[in-house]
Length: 156
Image (cartoon, rainbow, N blue to C red; front, side, top):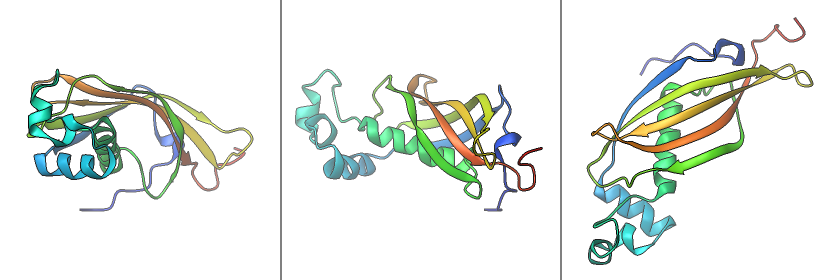
């Protein structure tokens, strides 16, 4: 994979949309993640999951959120300039994610604010979504990412 040019806080624009591509959710991955981190019966036990409202195994919401993060790292977050995040303002698990689902990621920039007190960084608020192969919205997260500003631009 070719390395992208660094993208600084001021390079993001409100309304800009990033297509993050696809991620295929496998049964093995769902079971492995849930067994370790979220061992509820509807995530790890076929028989128990069939008797729930889900009618079968579903992915942990936390697993789905981490898939979103992986896609964001692939096509939105610039590893060279990222400083992290102060957290999520909203995280919604809207529909169950099932083995075999093909998830598509998208991020829209809601706003950009350069820090006055720390001019070497800026805040990029965004809404990230995952849809499944049927076009159904399965996950939505509103958050803020912190990026470095372009060197030499502080105080301009």
